[in-house]
Length: 434
Image (cartoon, rainbow, N blue to C red; front, side):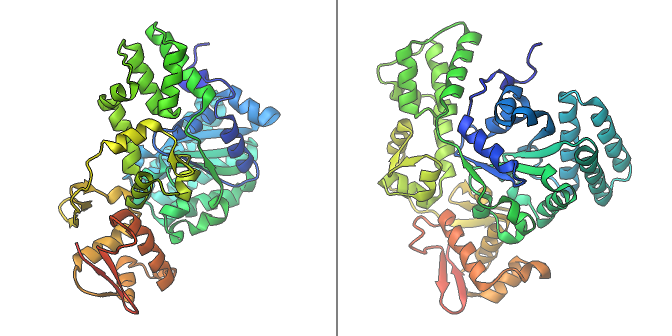
């Protein structure tokens, strides 16, 4: 039968170590975070688990039939309200059952959805999700794994009810419910604890960091490109691409497409850097870095997080062409101000919109400081205005506020050690200068 999903074509040993670690986490009833830099293949890992039976069999053996993986791309619902999020989860659950040809189970879930949607009520829709999970886990004995791809795109609009709902589902069926989140950074580093505290014990520290290169997966992508183009590069071409890209999935694929199109050059790096598509992929990585991390990669300083995501190895970049790209960037840029645009509800640094780099609390906090520029904002005043919900305020101590400001400075200041924009006023609070 012709495969219906591209991921079915991958060899079973693709991302073997990382998928193995992810499986080992969810088998204990915990939830996992698959973490990697842009373009390294986080989505691919989740889709492999959802659609590649041979990979599931390799890692789960005889238990493979008991596990049911539900893939969801959360970039599709990044600005939606919770009602739409729950509906999206239910629809994804139903669709996944149909793909696995569990048609009676799909029919049952569809009936729950149909009944709930007629009321157009968030609470009733939540009940439909609970009924679906109860039915599949308790009656059909399936272990459900909700997989949230591109989850960081949803984070700017998240509230604590999202993780509360996950905890409720987990409490109903215990070890038969887990989740996998594909993110660019650990959730606990980009989201305040108050927003995911209900699910804290199931998610924090369960990290699976993706190396830049996956040899079996890259070999498959090269062979697949050869198949669909009817052309073939030389072993030397592939070796040079792997060397100069570090085996980075997206950039290596783009490079081989360029080679197969007939373009070649003794200076492969120069050829690739002349291509808009390659520069775009490299910019995604550069833009992903905080100003502090950008300084570290330019200066060759050690950075523990960038070592964890395999971008640095002992202070040296693992993607040689990225190093060349950075060298070509304009030097000594003019320092830019940080501003809030009420018309678009965006925060900018110069012309760059940085809203998406900020967590919801960081955005509200920075917006408040900008709107009160040049005056000292007391800590109690900041907390009262940034966290207006009384229950949420109770979880924000002075120390917690200091930690949020510390993380925010990494995203805003040109040098986080020199507080140009967000100044501490000892014993009182903070003052903002654009």
